[in-house]
Image (cartoon, rainbow, N blue to C red; front, side, top):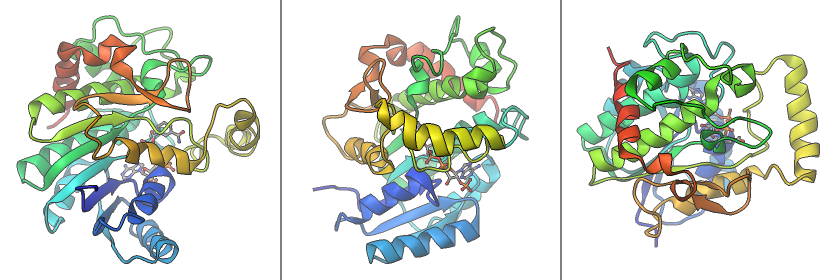
Length: 310
Ligand SMILES: NC(=O)c1ccc[n+]([C@@H]2O[C@H](COP(=O)([O-])OP(=O)(O)OC[C@H]3O[C@@H](n4cnc5c(N)ncnc54)[C@H](OP(=O)(O)O)[C@@H]3O)[C@@H](O)[C@H]2O)c1
């Protein structure tokens, strides 16, 4: 029986975050799901939809912009009581200008995937507002996707090198537009930071998971019109399913639930598709890519991320 009764999900108004809220609500043990979203109208609409489709009135909204530390701190203060688990799901390609610098000095894409989640973890733990576990949503991009996204090509995994990725100054011929603004590098740093947290806060469990390549989310919506049309209406719904390279949003969100409150999943590990795959069974990535288990790299990622806090 799942021990988690109260769960907070970031980026829960659409896509995988909303779908995992829907799936979790079918478990009678779940008493409350906090939808942590940045836009009140979108959050209200999601809450209404979820109540209608699930028949349960267990959804509360917490306003939180995950790229803005002060917004995250306000949200944590507003949280009425400690939650059992938190799914750090918000993220993606960083909006219309991913490489522009946010106020923190991180690029928008890094801030969206990492900055606010780091503040959220630190504040929730500091205020004793989380009891059991955090799930960080990473991606197969963190270890490269054959033919789509090259494996992050880091030389040292030092604090300085991670900082250069986070502030957009990282320089490597492989780090170009095709790498989708360093998305894979950022999700790599996210998985390392999550593992570092499992040692930093040993009373709480920390897992990274990838939903796998998932259709039916809003992930393509900020792409330029032609590219968006190509991905959203041709590649994702027609071509990729034919070649076994994409799965449904139901399967993507089910991966979060597979690792949540699962005693077989080791603290600090990262679960994603098998090598060379973007869907299908999940395996622990540290067994294939030892860098995920390197505690020095993990701590360097944690230090580099924290250096952006003013
Ligand atoms: N779909 C895939 O194939 C895939 C594969 C691997 C990993 N992932 C990861 O899975 C997670 C969910 O992605 P998705 O595909 O479901 O994308 P999505 O449909 O675009 O949903 C992203 C969610 O994140 C929220 N968000 C973005 N920036 C935010 C901010 N600054 N503050 C608060 N919320 C913010 C969005 O809110 P708004 O609606 O307000 O923008 C939305 O609720 C992401 O971390 C993504 O990187 C997805």
